[in-house]
Image (cartoon, rainbow, N blue to C red):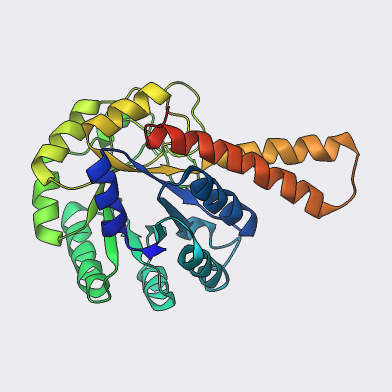
Length: 281
C-alpha cells in the first residue's frame, strides 16, 4: 500500500516506534527490504538517494519502487533521500514519489529556509511530504569526513522551531552525534538534543546515519522522539560479505547465485533493524 511520509510517520507516532528508511540501490535491495517488512508486518520507507543515482537512474528505479509499494501488504512510502538539486527533486515529484527530502543543510540558514520553503509549496500541492535537515552530520552521504567533532554540527532546538514554522516541513532530520557510513568508534549520542528539538517543533524527527548505532542507542533515540531512522551501510555490508563468501567458495560461476545470496543476507540484516525500530525485541 503506497502512502506518503506524513501518513507513515503518523503510524510511528501512534505506536511510539520508528519506521526504517532503507536505501534501495537495485532490485535486489528492493526485494530484501519489502520482503522483510511483509514478513514482520511493519510499515517501511524505501528510498532512492541522489548520491546513488549513478548506479541506478531514478527514471529506471522509480517505476519499480512505486509498483512494489502499491502491491505491498504493508504501508510503504517511496522517498527521495538527500535531494540536493532541484532537478532531482522535480524528477522525483514527476515520477510519483510520495516523499522527498530537500537537503540544503550545507548552505547558510537563510538559504536553507528559502529552498526548503519552495520545495514544500511545490510538493504539498501534489500531496507529497517533505523532510528537511537542520545541522549537519560530520560525514557526507558517501561516508567522507567533513569534520571530526560532531558537536559542532548539532541541531539547535530554538533554530529548529523557527525553521519548522518558516518552512512547513513534515519531518525534520536532526543531528545529535550520528554519522553516515561505517563507524570507526561507537557514536556518542546526545539525546537531549533530540528531546529539545521534539519539544520545540512537535514534529516527527529523523535520524540519519543510523547504521552502526547500538540497540540501546536506537531505543533511547526513539523514546526521545525519533520516528524515522535511515539505514543503509550495514545492510549493504551484509550483502557484500555474503557475495564475497559465495564467490570465494567456487561453488558457482553464475552471477545470479551471488546476487540472490546477497539479497537474502541483506533481508536478514534489515529484519534485525526493523525489529529494533518497531520495538519487537
